[in-house]
Length: 180
Ligand code: AMP
Image (cartoon, rainbow, N blue to C red):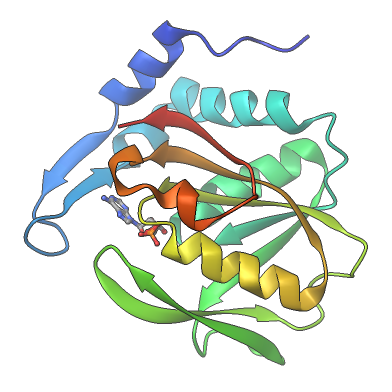
């Protein structure tokens, strides 16, 4: 049975997220999820909440973004019995890649995926820890588009709603467990 996401759960999760001002540069309040991940019952809770949401969605693969997205994505893929596809920063993947440039809340880079990571009929979920401006996830969507797969939803642990990241994603549905 699906466990409802209740306010108390979310409050407990929020209390375990540490705000680090001026990291990695001045003006950014970094949402540090390591205190949350280090508590077994909280780590389990976020994966359970996400698994409950997606269990019946017939997802073929979880697409996770380096590096913190891997932590959530790998646990969720195991739980949902899906495949796992890593999206990595440039020059990290060893095989043929597609690339997409992206702008971060604090910097710029490009992301890559293996050209044979997905098949065109596959349904995928994109996951990352924080949705900020949405630049990262829209670059990932572009990569998935090049592979011809279908993005069912974008899931993130934390959404910084004041940055309007979901607007950048157009029609793609976005789900976040925690909003600021
Ligand atoms: P964006 O492309 O602006 O949506 O930024 C999302 C990516 O940057 C995610 O991979 C996050 O891990 C990271 N990120 C951006 N802003 C923050 C923040 N305030 N705290 C922690 N991570 C962040």
